[in-house]
Image 1: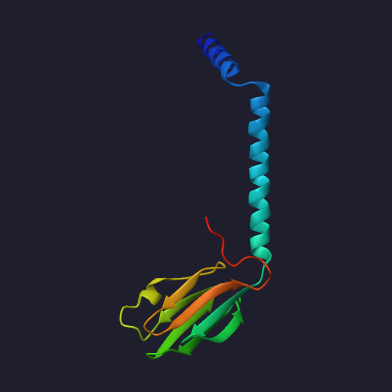
Image 2: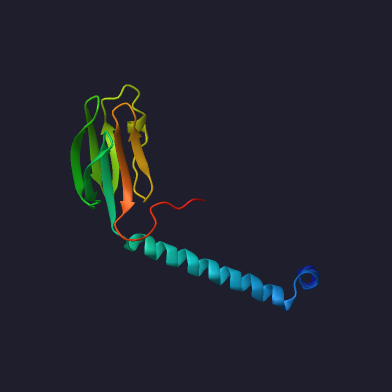
Length: 138
């Protein structure tokens, strides 16, 4: 009997705070949120991504971001920078710079992300191959 009294109090409390329109509004916002999340995920996976590599201000290469494995080197201002492309992402494995901040950046894979090696003047950035925006501010 205690269970029914408690659930009865809870239902009465819920009726005081929630009108039928409130429940509809919460459900509509939930459905809209799920739709927008799924729509954004499906669009993000469909665009072709490219890796743009700049050395000393000049574009050295623009490659498709393959799902396989590829290694390459770029001649920078102080020496060579070594890149690894694997599984749709890219990272700087080693560089001729003294502090190795570019190496510690790790993997990048989304449009707008970049790896910058200032001493060696090498920039690696992921860009969208289609007309979608490269950067989204949050």
